[in-house]
Length: 317
Image (cartoon, rainbow, N blue to C red; front, side, top):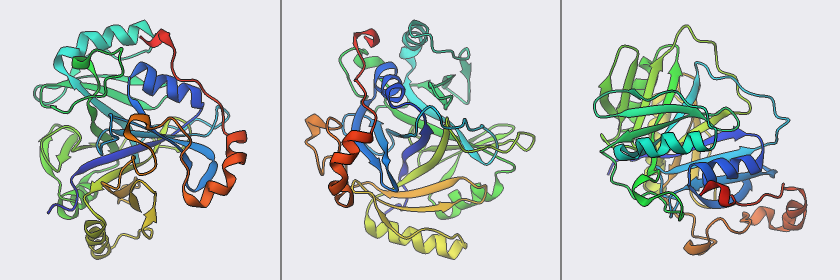
């Protein structure tokens, strides 16, 4: 059994809660599969966006700290771009949709074989791409207004900028079940399989400034491991590789181990289960404030201090 099966989720530091909801559920049409709080700082939301089930490899999560949070800076030593996957036939639809909602983007470009992408940013300046391809047979979340054939299917890849990518590549290929999928002059694509949701792009960017954490930057990227047992096996491999890591943390919907990869990006190993339906029915995921047991006594306080928001209106249809 492979210890790492692909990407699990990406977590970003963002600003306004309403703008998060508007962009990811409104503009992009993802499902809010969980409305909870930061388990390390409960006065801030933790939103999980993904497909209908919150399947690993489809999940984008945010910590919306508020608009007063200082902006971060994209740069080396950071995951700068999270790319989402859509069908090739959806390209014109998404160009028109981004124009409709005045979302700036760069014109379509080609990368590797059979892949067209456009770069854009969310309302916090977080780097995103839409990658149009014919490889991805995952079923996107149908929200009733984005046509089923044009829905976002999940994460396609993440892009990490590094001073040099050899040590990070060695970690991924020798310890984390990745192999080289494709290469260009300054980019190597690694993956557990040659399939969207399994890719990590490493970019050599020695001349770029060092990235700075803050609003509009990625906090960490999580890789999926099947079970608690495979997670423990991964911990043994990290120990042998000489990487310090946290203890196993219970995140209710999965368990997690965190560590810094050699280039400075925070990696997480997250179990694929138990999943987001452990405390809500599938049909009503994300509709109520879900809390871990240690915060239940604070529920009234959190309902008072957490920002109120509305789900996207008809304008996103």
